[in-house]
Image (cartoon, rainbow, N blue to C red; front, side, top):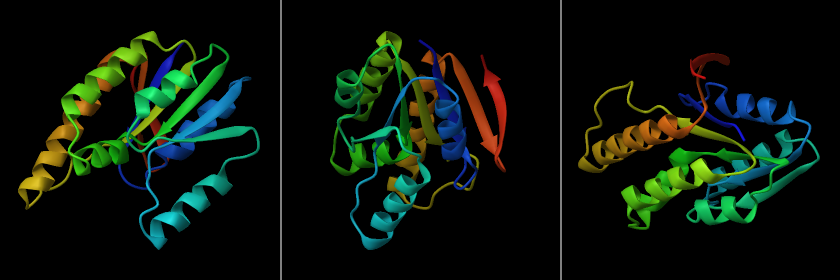
Length: 169
C-alpha cells in the first residue's frame, strides 16, 4: 500500500494535510501520536489535536515504540497517520536510544507495511546552525531520518503556508 511522507516547518499545515489525505480514503483510520504529555502546555496541545480529528479515528500512543505500534495496527484496509517523527526522534535521543538502529527498523517496516501510512516530520535544517552541540546533533539526526524515510516512501510532500508541494511520487 502507499506510503506518504509530509515535511514542513512548524505550523506549516503538515498535520492538517496528513489528516485530509487520510480522511479522503474510504478506510479505517489510526492516529499514531508520538508526543509525551510532560507539561501543561503539551497536554493542552494534545487535547486540541485530538479535538481536531473527527469521529472514526483510533488513537495510538507511541512515544518510543513506533515500529511496534505500527506492526500491531498493520491491516490492509487501514491508514495510519504518524504525527510526528520529530517528536519521536527527540524522545529517542532523550531516552538514549540508538537512533540509527530505530531509523533502520522504521524504514524496514515501511517497506513491509500492508496498509496505507502517512508520516509527518519537521524540516529543521533550513534555519540557523544551532548554538549547542545537542541542538546540532538533533538537527543532523533529523536530517538523516528525513532522508531515509523519504527514500523508502512512495510520495513525499513539502508543506509551506498550508500548501503542499510534491517532491516525489
